[in-house]
Length: 186
Image: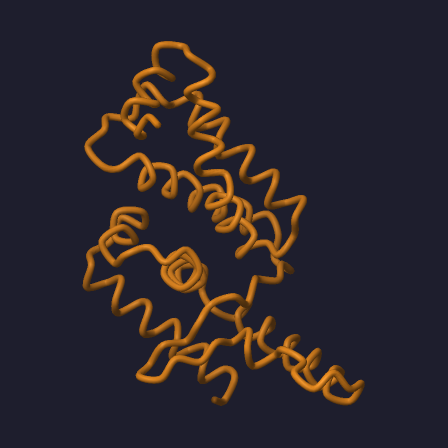
């Protein structure tokens, strides 16, 4: 199997199969980032399509100074921010964890464990509160939580994608988790 740099070389030479291989390799990651911002399958598909269209158009400008995935995630982040500007009433995915000594998944807080109607209704109410709380986070905090806790990127990768220092990544991530906890009164 060819690595990213080999695929890029072939794609730059006009081999569509190589570009298709890059799409297949990264489509789920790009979609996942988009979905964490939109919680809407159709909008996430649109963002992913826009990302790969921009990658195709700008592939020759990729200088291979960083990993292709970092460059791709940066384009994805930009597309997500552009999409957020267009829609203010979006709902985010809750598949991230708040890590502050003890690991507790927000998703696990809202899962229906007992299966009865009362608990299910309570779970739905909690889920709505968490979604509203996440919507109150600034965009940069939503993005940093997505990249770290959902996509599991390293601090270094996040720094490259968001064009900030490693220290700022840590500070923003701490602040994002703290703000979410405060909003939720946990």
